[in-house]
Length: 116
Length: 280
Image 1 (cartoon, rainbow over the protein chains, first blue to last red):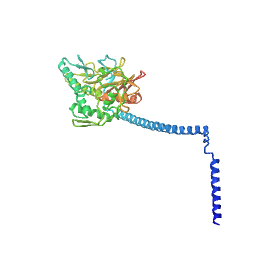
Image 2 (image 1 turned 30 degrees about the horizontal axis):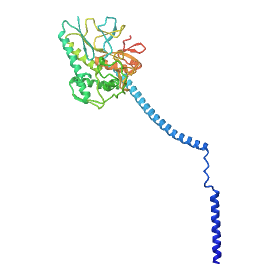
Image 3 (image 1 turned 180 degrees about the vertical axis):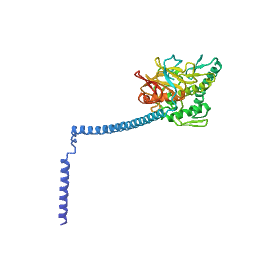
Image 4 (image 1 turned 30 degrees about the vertical axis):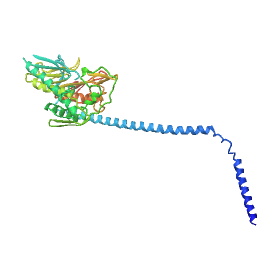
């Protein structure tokens, strides 16, 4: 009885070993791995390159946008200052104190005014 | 009879006219006064009071410097910042860093414009400037000197003091008015007040091939790009005339021609506009 059971286990173990060996041999582990499709390789490389470029472009656009917004703010501030300045000048001219006595004459000049 | 005296001071030719029999001693005193005031207000003399102020940021000044800086700051308030004495660094950045006669015709460098509008505190005789700013009194200094000297020369008789375009008069001459030519075709007659001319037709130099002039726009820190070439203003005194002439020059022809002050504007396309009743 014990010999019977032992032989049965040995038979099963032999069958299992045989099947595993069969599977290993069928897998041809000694043959070279098949080469990847070159189109897929090129596509992957292109995707990688485009991702890298898009990050660079985004950085560049962000930088330009920031500097544009700064320049715009500076221009708006300058325009506001000039507007305020012109208003102040207009108010100053309107509220000018005593007007000096001056007229256009047809006489020889004593002096010639020039840019100071 | 009008006696004349011409001499160099404050980087320009000063002319004194006085209607008097003999005013030699007064004229001598006036010439000396110009020299004294230049020693106070020149930014080109390293030992002047103004240079010391610009170097140290503060000074216990003479009454003259404190007075003229106070006038300049008041003018900045009145003109909404158009007239600004704190353009010193911007002038230097534009290349006007030495007397005009010493300036090279052109250089390759073109510096970054400097900021204007620095804080200035005048407390009695003590003047303090915000760090990073300096004061230039080029225009208003000449107006101030013209007024001071006219006051002195008037002791001898009716007089006119022309500090290179900043003109002050006192008294009425025999002819009835002081006649001042603005150009070949236009002569003004004044009996009181002052006249000043600001423009970019003189004191022009080049940097990196670009024309530069001394009238800095405080908003940009660069020489102004107005459409005006020259502005002559008649006002109650030479200081006010100088402030108005510079401010109207920076404002451009549209704003300047609407101002109700006696002025002659020359635009870059050669037109001459008159305001404040001078045209009628």
